[in-house]
Amino acid sequence: MDSVKTQLKLRSDLHIVRKLWHISSGLAGLGAYYLLGYGPRITAYALFVLAISSFLFELLRMKFAVLNNHVVKVLGPIMRECERNSFTGLPFYALGVSSSLLFFPEKMAILSVLFLIFADPIASTAGILHGRKQIIKGKSLEGFLASLLVCTLITYTYFFNTSTSPVYLGIFSLLAGLVGALSELCSTYVDDNLTIPLLSGAGLTFLAMIIPLN
Image 1: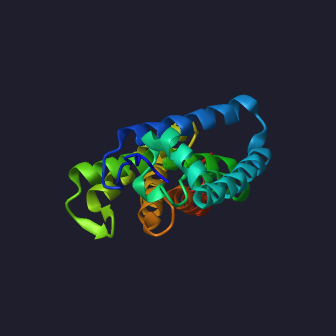
Image 2: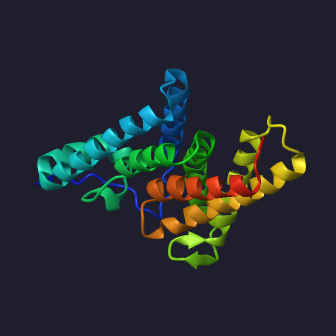
Image 3: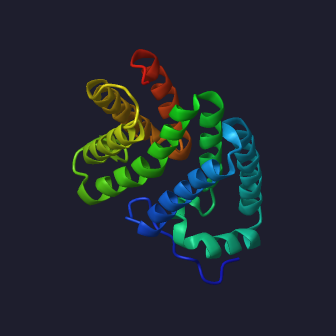
């Protein structure tokens, strides 16, 4: 039983701490991926185990109020109110990245993870601060355009050193940005930590078949 209920942020709040945690933990994970050098398959299996373990822990947390209270007190600064008695983003994050690394070519999987790391919090920030025109529930045109811009710039930077002509790279980057923005838009009813890496990975893989990059 709660004596003092921990105050948590709402989805409509700016929640800068959560966004900084999202970006920094994602970049730390990518840094560990390249530093350890285990490759996509082993990393995917390890993340899959983490995802399953996290889902099981979340179920225990929701079942036992004492455990849940401790988790909320510790992780309160990065949790949302809707996660108090429901799943947090961690198991979906681990499952989404794991699936992308397992199912798609490494470069496309890593690019989809970069979309997840940056596009999600930036689109959310743009939507909360400047969102005026709603596309679908919880998603604004301003957030969509911010996501499109960020994903386009990430793609262009990621493939900048390839021998592909600037024109082809520009076209690929713009279309990849559209893929990333659409995958973020599709996260209304399914956790974006799962939809962004999976939908982006699939879209980028298909796009690379049409416009191959050297």
